Image 1 (cartoon, rainbow over the protein chains, first blue to last red):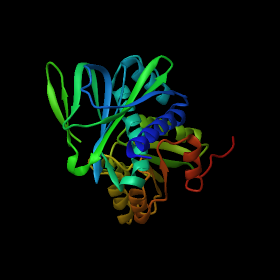
Image 2 (tube, each protein chain N blue to C red):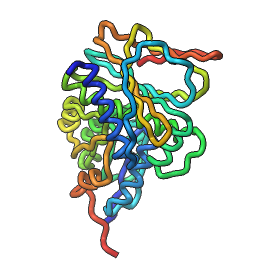
Image 3 (cartoon, rainbow over the protein chains, first blue to last red):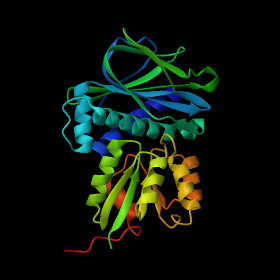
Image 4 (tube, chains in turn red, purple):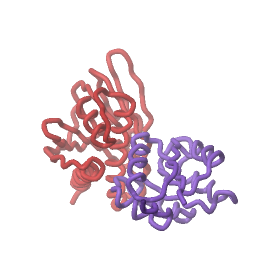
Length: 177
Length: 129
């Protein structure tokens, strides 16, 4: 099994396990792919977390505002009708658990990896880009008719890009990951 | 006798879940204090009587391993059991936590039963009504 297949399997299993354990929900793994093209402009909630070791990269979880609220409501057993700090914190923690679990699986193959503190972006019409020619392993999940996308890129350290750029028409910033 | 528990995690979501889970364990818990990182946790420990600490590892400012080391280095607090709750499933950090004196660890994602099982023997069960 090559590394991409290992990552795909781990992302799928980890995401399903986090949803089953923490939310009591069975979501469906809908589609997986390796993507290299520049993503279209996004809107909604996107959470990033960095991985570093002899290999380095980024994991991300993205979804619509409505799904982010639904995840928060289910996980915390509370009402969530708009994207607030609690919703963003929940998506960040979801990312931490999914990518943390993938990290544990990958450490058997790649050696010890460190995990950063997650960062969440919420907005409209923004793009994200990892510096370098990075391949993203992308797995899409369905919760009823809503889609959750989990992505991971990982490269040997010499090739890894450590800065992830976020751009929007009005602002830009870089995140050290 | 009822115990006081300190929950340490930079995620407010996880602190909220642990509050709920701890109340469901059937353990005799009086107060659940919260802290968002190791530094805040040390401030709570200095101000409140705490019988058990549940702590994340990966946190800003002061992480869970630094907090554990500080607790175990203190004559006043070293008897307090510390259970790590973490996404870190690898041997490195978990092994370090055990070496530093952690009473155990629970991996995220966790179930209420896993928390209950880990706390059995560390907290007294609630008396029947």
